[in-house]
Image 1: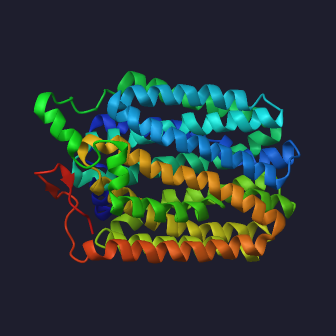
Image 2 (image 1 turned 60 degrees about the horizontal axis):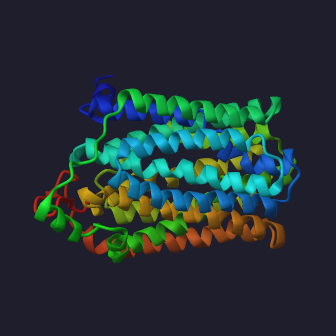
Length: 421
């Protein structure tokens, strides 16, 4: 018991109060995160559209998310983290509710893009707030805890959504919108602005010349952009689990309720294992963790080629979730290390853009491949792409992860966290 108590204290202790309010708001929001998970199933089963159309809508959702990532990152640095977060959350609530009522295929596609834009605009602001609030020594732990909250909510919402959908899909959209409004209320009441005070005169000009002063400077950071490119490959593979997988299960005659239970396995495994695995692997280099996580996830998803029953689908989810658990905290720590303090929103926005671009390309390619080339090509292709991403992560990060340095190390001259790993 003493060991468990000590592990809990080391995992959760010493973080700022405002971080825990942000953590709570994330949990509340994700408890109602029904729509993204069930959108493909809603379009193909409830509305009767093809797998290719479902892939197109999911791709437009991702395209909107890509625009939202960049916009949210810029606004988080210029206007403020809190204001950007509130505006994005309220916009997401409205557009999600509207999506539940539109029936015309063009309207569905357009509103889905708006849902992606407003929903994703909040992510860079939230990540920047956490980085502002939490000291460098505790930042990886804080991001891991936030990811944990996301998956607690996801696990509950995925399981509940299957039962709610049985009563009517509209309730999924309205429930998602309602919890997003609650999330915004928590931020409004409990969260203060964390954007560092603007510097004036020469200091301001000097800051503008540092790495990450503008979006163009972020793009010029070649090492970071290489990381973003590899993340795009990884995320494209991972997207198949939230889009193509639903269609594949539907084609095998499995219901929305069964898909919800299989999807919930992902959240349950993360809730149980995320923090213990993160603690156990904390001494490993970022390159090794990202490479290992990518390969395990890719081949776990690749094993879907053998799945025809709920039990086998669930087993593949357990395997690829282990890869996600290894990958997630390592990727968050690397981005935090690379981003200078004055450009956290923009770096987080560009990193989110990689995920959003994958949310566009992944469902579109997955849906078309499933329809025209078959499921074997989809799932074995995932295994190949994920392996390629893993090799790239290892090669990119290996030169700077040979010697371990503590996450607390910060270069006082630049304000940039030193590399972890």
